[in-house]
Length: 371
Image 1: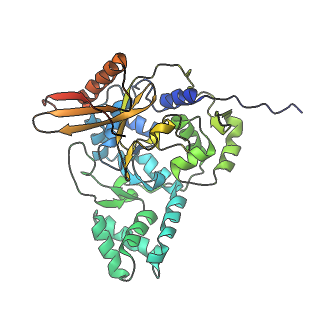
Image 2: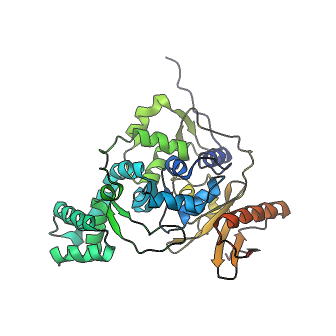
Image 3: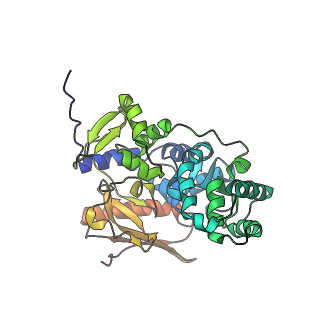
């Protein structure tokens, strides 16, 4: 029997460049917005604007109105899926990924079981479905309707149970570009006009995850989706995958034909929104976030918008809009040299040309991040 070969080691920079290439951040893609949303397996959408900024950083000819139109046409929708957080997904992924992560949603309900004493969860799901399919309802309306049935239950627990037991989407105008709307919910099946798919085997999603976030470990994917016990799936797929190790010896898997650029491949600056999945989808985030910066991108439970330099997290940014002027402030963690500063300014100009209100002057300012 031939000795088992030791998988090759991928350096942090090699992992960085490979991930940036999959994330459409090494060079901008020419694909359509719905194709990009599908390739990326959804966009973090805890706030309404991040999906738009995420695509502006990744696509060559993106206009915010393009994604907004897809939402109005119900080709994409906002729904709680990965890690119990809101994502913008294509309609197809709403109806397949949501059932796939149902096990994680069931675990979430169990966390609130003390507040659900005496509540029949199947009956809760039936009543909530009927209620939100009559017309989209606010979370407050859903909570009050369920409290009428179970007045002794914890109100928050009832809301969580409804959200976890049912695939509830946020209907438009919520989430449309530069348009407002309170959160109103109905079922994905009702909003999209077709039934959910049967719970799929995770194999295809593993391959899609590697295409968008690889090379990656089993624990990386579990961090991304909130599921557990995926080792068996990876082992079943091993004949179709390549094996690597990171510098700490962790086993990584990848698709044979996926891009793995040289670690010295140039990586241009990119401005990313808060909650961007690039920063949340691996157990070990050192491929993008250096150890000394891990705690500098959050305040409480709220993240800042961040930017990349040479492929790695390098600072924060923010935008302030008034009727008279739009100001984008860039706050590096260090002091960029003249070339890096010029690159950041050029990328900021491009972002503002796409995302800032038309006809309003804009300013780019540099600041510093307080330690």
